[in-house]
Length: 167
Image (tube, rainbow, N blue to C red; front, side, top):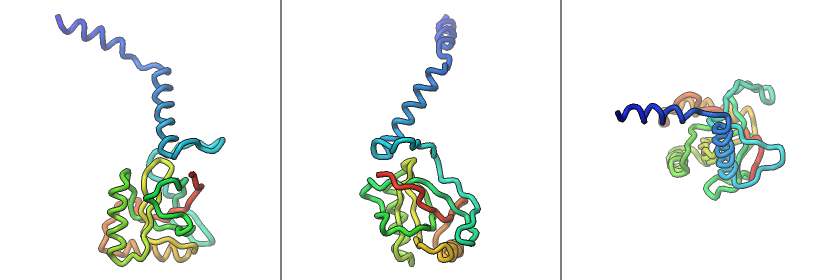
C-alpha cells in the first residue's frame, strides 16, 4: 500500500532543462562570490578543478606548466609583487588552513620563501619556489622532484604561471 504513493512521487522528480539552468546559475554565482564579487566584462570562471598541466616551451625551455587566474583579494595569500613569473607548485588545497600548514612545513624545511596563491576556482596553490627565469624554474622543478622530504602525487610538481589578476 505504501509502495504506490512512493512510485507516484518518483515520477514527479524528472530533471528538466530549467532545473539544470537554475543549478548552473547558482553555481556560477557562487564562483563569482568566491572570486570576490563582480568579474570584469567578458570574463567567465570556467575552471572548476586543478589547472590543466601541459608540456609547453617558454623562452626555449620545455616544461610542464599551467596557467590560471589569481585572486588578489585574500589576506592569506602571498602578495603578487613577491611572486615571480614562474612558481613551482607542490600542492593544491580547498581550505586555506591546509595550504598554510603546507607552506609552513616548506618554510621550516630548506625552502626559503614558499608562496601561497588563490586561483579563480577558490583553491589555494602552494609553491616551493618562485622566479622570473624559465631556466631557473625548470632547475627548481627538478630539485623539488628530487627532494625526498616531501611526497608528491601527480600532477605535482609543475610550474604555474599567473594568467590574470582578479581583485
